[in-house]
Length: 220
Image (cartoon, rainbow, N blue to C red; front, side, top):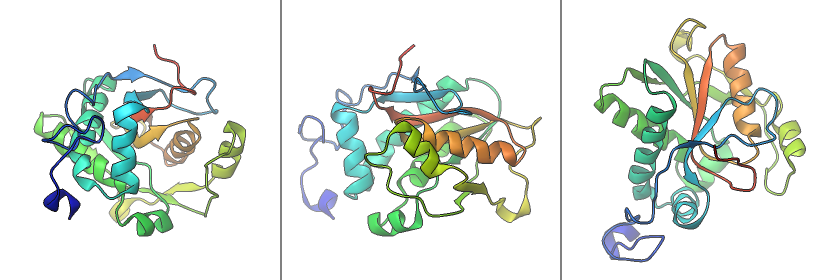
């Protein structure tokens, strides 16, 4: 409703015309794997750093219901996936949000980004499949304020694979799985997601996020 009633202004610089202008969202895909990272963490690519306009865009989209921001954020995610895995078929699996978080926000931010990114990639001719097969197997505490070790302990064995329609996710000889999330901080969530995927018999090729926190990232 706000997007329909109010003039569009960039969440980064407040210029009129769009919710996120091209000057503010600088997409620079890179390996920003957290160092040190938890055991089992796949290589983590991100479109940008979690700061400035990118941080504002993710917060407005995720927590304030500005779902129109999904389009530019998903384009950045798709471009980063294509950079991280430049050739071959792939399976995109979003990291699930807790049901209570989805209810509170009124939408599933990562699921929406993953679906739009897959659509972009398919439009470019990539053989890509979206599989929202990860499920939470138990409740976890709020991650805010936890150390890297505490986050890992909090998330241990918290995810499982529920194969949609009974179909296997992907065999070890099949297309690699690309995990997607909005932000990577310590890597604990993506490491737990990767564990669940591997236990289901699939290969994790990479993890891709819209942004990575600078504090826990090393840019190569």
